Length: 227
Ligand code: APR
Image (spheres, rainbow, N blue to C red):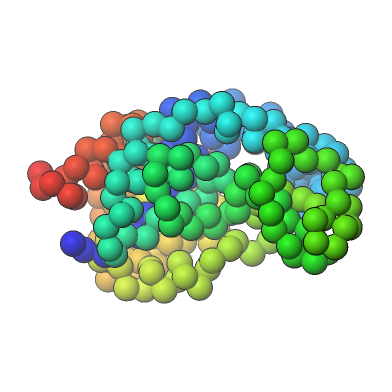
């Protein structure tokens, strides 16, 4: 099978009931991202930031996986498939995927910003929580905020440099570096495909428009079982 790099975004989990960011009524129309998704916002008001992510952790726990997560989990068991997600939810893992590259971190993990220790986040985090390693009350969700470097970029760059196919699923392609992956893959010689409710306008060889729960299982079946 060809080598495949898949990049997913909030659209993958939209039909599980988790809101996207930039669609009408999306999270960034309800909250100011400068308040809840930047290191400066956290320094100003950690309680507000924890409350925002606590609510998202609760929503995640209540959200069912959908057919698109299940199809990607099935595909990810094949050699040569690299599954990268901007999503901080755990729905791909709950659908059975085991090696998901969470470039924007994970809601289910906590991070001490004094000693960099990571651990499983409780459902409710608060500014007073002590780090289990150093004891500092300096714990934050282990998510990547605006102005911070996404995780696992070396591994992602290496996969993009030698992939045959790059597939973008349910992302608006507005946040870098993820938004630049399509061009990196193309310049390395890969074919590029977008599966999205509405085309993002990125430079893809092929675009299929529709809901992830229809497009993704169909594309995975084509890839594994033939057209
Ligand atoms: N099926 C497929 N795609 C969908 C669906 C659906 N059911 N519903 C919405 N979409 C598409 C939208 O058309 C849009 O292109 O999903 C995309 C969601 O875009 P954004 O809300 O911008 O989410 P995303 O691209 O994941 O955002 C990137 O921005 O704020 C940050 O860190 C956050 O990781 C996030 C990053």
